[in-house]
Every structure is written in C-alpha cells, then in structure tokens.
Length: 205
Image (spheres, rainbow, N blue to C red):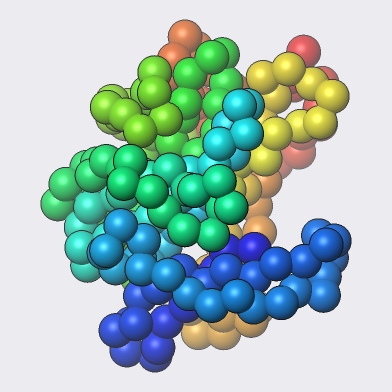
C-alpha cells in the first residue's frame, strides 16, 4: 500500500509504504521514501502488463508531475523517471492502459474546489505525454462534475472497459465527502467521460 505521508503544513511530502499478505490487511508499515529525491504530494501507482510498477506523483510544490519506475521490490524508486507538464500544476493523477496506449487523468490545483479535468496520452509509460484537454462532457463538465478524479478502475473480464472514479469533496466536512463513478469511452485516442444519471455495463458493448 502506498500512501501520502505528510504534516498538516505539507512540509514532509513523502511516500509511505505498507505491506500485507492480504489486500484487506493487516498492514505492516515499512517507512517512507523521498521518490527521485523530490517532494511527493498527490500520487498513484500503476502496474504494467510486464509486471513493472511505476509511481506518478505531483512534485516541485505540485508544479510538475513525475513518472518513475519502481525497483523490483516495489519499495524504492530507480533512476528511470521523467518530469512532465512542468509548471502546469496537475495533481491527482490516475493512470490506465487502453487500446495499447497509456492514458492519464489529472486535476488542476485549486485546493478542495473542483476544476477542469485534463486527459493525456502516451505511447510509453514514461512519456512523452500529449495533453488531450478536458475529457468530461455534460452538466458541470467544466468542474469535473463537481468532483476530482482519483483512480481509473479496469472492469474484470472485459477488454478495454474502464470506470473513472472521482472524489466529490465536502470541504466543510471531509468525512462526509462522497464518490462518483462513470464509464470511460474513447473516440480514437480521445478520452470521453460523459455525465450519466444512471448506467450499467452494457455501455461498454
């Protein structure tokens, strides 16, 4: 398990790692790392089909998004990493693979207030990443449906079927925040996340 480890004033900015024999725990905390000798705030881990894992993390005060390979033990970073979207302030990275390409969904950096999502695509997990604009359509699409992306979940047993998961933050009571799930679809390499009041797996064909 990878977690953002920090202080209330966001001065620690490290990645914590915990280990368990089962996904449901109990977890043993192994400690924290400073990935690629740089600060880490919002982050995610992506495991590729060849078994290699990669850490994506907002760094340099959230201004730049790092993408880097994890070592064979998945507990440290290697010297293979790239700096992406320099000074663009992209946070909350969610990474997935579809149609043979790598896709990235990120948020802008406006605290707990929603903002436009941005998609990107790459042939290689470490980039270069090509910005594709806001993939959201429908009511409040310019504010990511009043939410923030957190993960893209592959549907087991289906090919190229993914669900975009969002946090709908309640900044006045974070414990009362809720979630939003919507299907991800593509036209070519253009990601589309359309607002739907209701949906089921038939939307994937």
